[in-house]
Image (cartoon, rainbow, N blue to C red):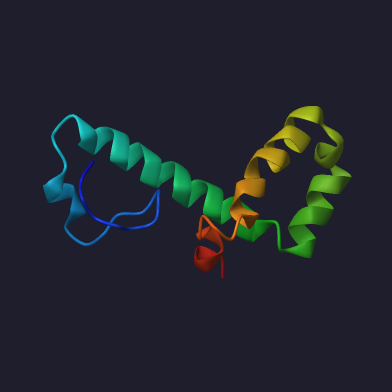
Length: 86
């Protein structure tokens, strides 16, 4: 690993310089995924967005329900992801 103690999915300042060239694309992809999931989790707090999803019938789709189940890792206090949700 790279030896720093930032939460998973985040980059410490100048952490890219500690990564091998092989690790950098993977780290960037993880950071991108983290940011996208964070944005979506925050969007779920918007009642207008939820209403839109409900009107479209998305909330009842099995794939969407499964994705919400996957996102429950954000609730795990031991992982520390809740600190990023505003």
